[in-house]
Length: 153
Image (cartoon, rainbow, N blue to C red; front, side, top):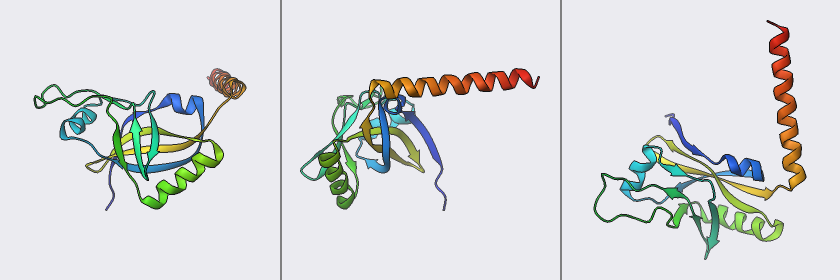
């Protein structure tokens, strides 16, 4: 049984600002209208982060727009949402965050079958010179590809 994966949103800023050391797949606790908004692609991960409180993991500042055709009681688009992970994985992440000074950052939201999944990453912050180095490498790669394309015309 293969579940189809449909990516809804990616956090491009995360790969620019952080080195991703490990990736984890988690479920996310949502209301029905939030799932409909995600299905419509109305989710933003730009400035979101995860926190561990009392052995549970939560995603903060993940913006899911209000579903207009939904019921009268609207949920806050930026509310804190609980993530669904095994306790052992949460404790492993908590230990690494405490010891190494890493952050837990949401990387992407996607549908796996009919379920909404959130990919989170254990990340370490980049320094300014790391960002400049990455930009220089991308620029050089683009230049090489452009030159090769022109040469083989």
